[in-house]
Image 1 (cartoon, rainbow over the protein chains, first blue to last red):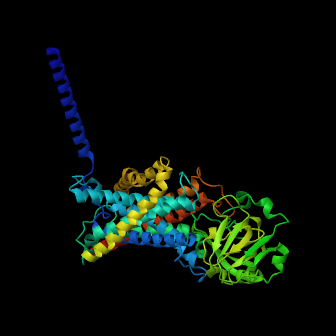
Image 2 (image 1 turned 90 degrees about the vertical axis):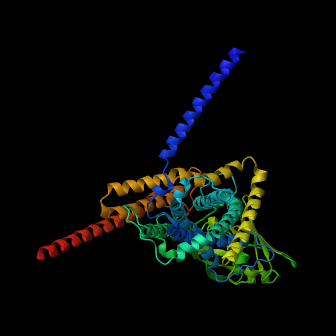
Image 3 (image 1 turned 135 degrees about the vertical axis):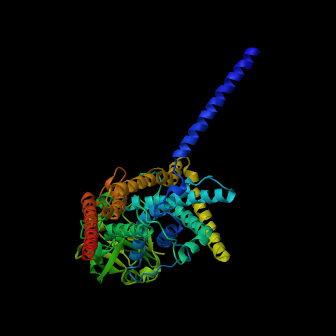
Length: 403
Length: 150
């Protein structure tokens, strides 16, 4: 019994000593961790946070709206309508999507640096609402980082993850824009105070960047980021943007996102027995390539605009959809399902809405930039429609069905 | 103000909830493979707060301590731009998980593009610093001259 009591006392002493040691260490660490008031740079403070935050909010809003549009065009619900004119509309919305995302990268980093001292505020949690707010900001910044890094990796077609990019990017986009709106609602009084206060308090000129200097640097960084990449879609910047993910080495002066080899169509696409089947309520008509060439040909200038933000104007020649539908016993304005020779992958089938099949600029193209379509660009024939994502401009067409 | 806050918060909460539902639509059937997705989402703020932000702070502080005044702001801005350009170039240069280049896509010379862009940035830094030095000297010279006259 005595031995047991002595053992208990020893254990107790040991635990107490260990406890004291841990507490000492914690105090020592706490002493070394910076205090929020030690951050004296011009970057910190609500005036900077509000300004950078507003720009970041606008960038995310552009990303969200344009991304949602692109999603709706690819998965159109009943009520959705997307016009075929102006022909550059999708090129602009998707270019804006990617470029505002690029601009948001330095803006997000600047915004988080501006509020970095808050990370060291003590106590860590003051109240339940404060805890909820801190947690919601973790969700917000997690979703924001996720969307921007995913998007950046996707335009580079670099996939260090195991999920399907569009699905997860789309889901987290809703969470991101939702938590941004909640965050703005929570911070609205601060935002108003910081943006409308007439004169700023006199700032001691520190050794680093001033408040204005930090804001200017942030703006400059966003501008340089856009300039360095925008050549992917803005022709005037093609030779300026060193970090564009497209080059000018595309076949027939146009980048190729899916090659014939990758789509496993090299043999079937070159088969002399190839026929285009056009299925309409009047029956099925088959066209040989020679018969297609004998139909009235239309030449149009249309851009290819990829979901990944690059775009390129090109001259196409082929049969306009209204002509083709009339020649097959149907009429312009019906929805048409387009099936490719490509049997692998997700983009072998697309549906052209009536809006586009009625537009004489929508072609079943046989030629590109004055030459017969290259195999990689969809030989023997492909769809090219105004203001549609590149993934829906189906190549190696085998069958059209009026719906 | 109160109405505005409610008008922002309500659709915000709805969008957030919809996003979570969509995410669960993906994550629940894919469990436990989708754990890595959660790591990706949580990883951004943690890596930023624990690595990038302190690093940026320390580098910024060092630059202000080490550099003479006219060089400070231009070099700091140059450093920021270098970091941002580095981030943008990273997925184009590190291609362990990238798809093979295709005609016209990812077949450009990104290293060259990055180096040329950085050369432009640092040339601008150099020019800005030299202009600032010349301006400071001018001002000092004028002060001395006016003092000599009086």
